[in-house]
Length: 409
Length: 165
Ligand SMILES: [Zn+2]
Image (cartoon, rainbow over all chains, first blue to last red; front, top):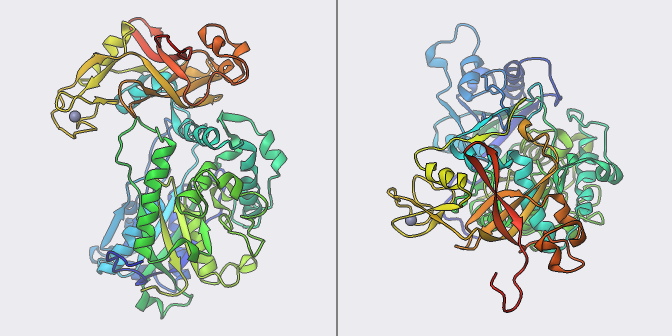
């Protein structure tokens, strides 16, 4: 598996983190929580605010609803945070020199890729990467629009609106094509919530879910029920990335970025129309790019942390990444084969994912890779895990990052 | 009370909505390569011409179901009195992968069985629910406001040997 030349492989490392409480409503402005979480991550890395010369995020407030986007309240762009990171008396010359935001759909791998590029190129030495997510008052995706202009004119007038209808279509296509039953997904939900119930900052801490509870949940957009969707929350996570050389002098064991990749479909579709074949065909290319970038193959991955903001993505990623053949994921997840408590299983949701933590996008996946590979997972520490993979969003629009405990070349 | 969102025709889409108002499905066709485009983009989705000079051409309105979902809660309050309703992902007959999403006017009964339905789809025989992958559909229209109609679909009887579909 020779790389086409991802020259940053193994040269950039995650060296510290902080994760806020994940709550339905924090009762405090998101900006304040973000600033505190950022400072905590910088301190955790053994650095000071003045050491941070790069700030990267993806600030999207991912609602289809008619909620205001307000910096510091519902969204925290990199410029907002960068302006507030330094203490009193700092001058313009002290401002971070690399401040950037990722605007694509797989926000977590997207922003990590930008941070890696910044460190590898010397655009910044120590980059703070964070994601701040907000749950507004009222219904998350409710939208009172009475006029559908622009792209929405092709979908909203007939009631095709929001991400639940979006995922309902390819999920039906999957179930019908492969003769799968929606009951099979209970194994995914039980596993995500079992692990989330062990994580103190999770919204679902100490609250596992049974298969019977999953199957009793109301349907929202058939075959998607309430528990197939992650729950909207207020929450912030922050990480510090630096060069492998500087990482050697910092307090925690570094976790190296081996490579990353994103997908992008070439076929133009109606807004939010994600046919199964687009997801899987482009997803296969995303996976190919990931293995090429990282120099790692699927057989080497100990911790494939699959994205699960909607549960069908777990099937799609399992198949796109080649952990099982197409059409087989609904069988693969049964009988304990993804149970993180079994040594012979593939622990695809050991960090609880978004279903087990709350709508933190791909943060739980990234955090689990960091905690396990740096030996900081506490009671949940897995022995011998050296290669992690953190996905976000759909295989055809999102992406993934490969993390390693030792630097790859 | 919030109403269902109505389309706002623009420079490119105006002929589509004008045709729909007369219950005609007319899809944009690129003058450069002849491909249908839905939605019509600033650059043709097929040949990427930035001067596609679309003409809206009436199509047969026939297609096949590629997928569906039953909406039981809508983020659009104007649909609150319409739930549950079915949306179908339809591949139109005129061109591979020319796909459109619309309401299935037969409603959720189409997922139960032929007996639950009236009309031609009820003739499809026992067993299989009429709404399934590959099921044939025809375009229909919902008149939602004076001069505004929204394309939708209804199940069509499967073509039988010797019969025009
Ligand atoms: Zn063209």
